[in-house]
Length: 170
Image 1 (spheres, helix red, strand yellow):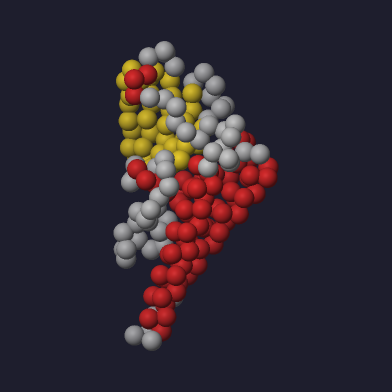
Image 2: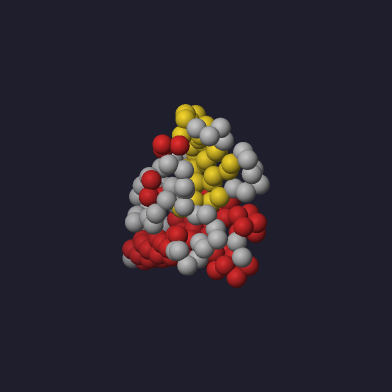
């Protein structure tokens, strides 16, 4: 009986985690909220001369040589494109990096039931990058909304970890 309750709680937490992640994505890619912030990748393939890719621990870094002589650096997790988070830097203005979301995710990328809690590179990237990005590039009232969503996601993942780490009596 206790095992069924534990599995039901875990399922409920996963659904809540997914709902919060969707809200975060929708908020960040909404035209209303990304006004004056470049959250869309504007470089098209026709402007790219050539590109180097480096993969490491679930993260891919691309160094792009543009036809106009500029360079761009992109970093994103190399998982499902629906989950891609990308940071774009330009060598002309290295301090002006951009944080790019690639669409709204429909499903978790971690494979059930082997990857509990779902702390894959996607969530690591959110926790590592979003606070710094918000501090430097987002108006204060929007910072609070984003950071509340990120904290909610972090608490849910911690709770999932506690649920999974609990002793189960069979």
